[in-house]
Image (tube, rainbow, N blue to C red):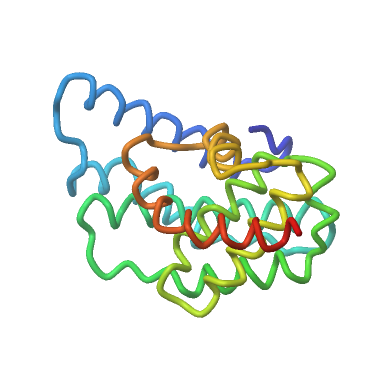
Length: 190
């Protein structure tokens, strides 16, 4: 992923990919990686840098950059939760992302960066599981799937995995959304 002149996102994605490679290395060796040490040295520095620097959404490009920043924050927060960090509250970011996507204009996103948009909405959907925005994210994901000719749940997940993903970790989290998504996609298809 290249955001040209956006050093914040380029660095965050680069560092996150290195952290993901570390998890794969540890998994391959049968070693545990979900712990406080992993959070402290790998995830927290990336997350703290992203949280403190919002991107003013003034045009289509900056809207997508800010949506990407929020999606990456949700991704990293989910990693923190999975690694045992308690008290991670993401509702503010879920609501901010929904507002940005709702008023930013979907057509802006569909013209480019389609896998990124699916990935962003997937993490909004996962993190909205216990908040009021859940239905909106399910509908948004089904809308995107139809617009992008993604005929199944597997196609949506496959596209999201092209951006950033850790198998076994996010697959189980995402499975919670599958039934509602399938129902919504079927409903919207007719």
